[in-house]
Amino acid sequence: ELLVAVGLRSVRPAERGEFTQRAYSAGKLNLVEVEALADLVTADTGLQRKLALKQMDGSVARIYEGWRSQLIRGLAHAEAIIDFGDDEDLEENENGTVENIWGGVIAQVQTLRTSMEGYLDNANRGEIARDGRMSLL
Image (tube, rainbow, N blue to C red; front, side, top):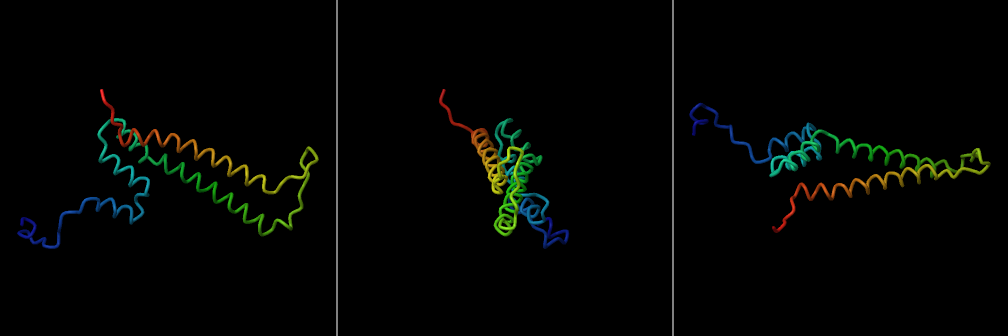
């Protein structure tokens, strides 16, 4: 009523989450930051707030971006082997054995998998802290 009285008929209160949605749509926040903001708003404990702020500072997004870069490099290497592998002359290494052209890709993917599995193990513990754990005393 006050807004109508001052001539602002087209003004309305924002919907729940509207500013976050607009920031995401405009590229100001990524999906990890949106999730962190939701965790921060709903945090009940200091630990939950601390985890949400850590997620919001970009550390989690940097981990995901590193994985993405490694996957892209591995995929590019694999595609190059598929497309041009017959043209490659395999060179002998210092031990006198021929290098496997897939060796680099396989090692990269195995390292990446180990990194992801380790992170997911830690993430499960973080999820317990974020969602809380019910206990009886």
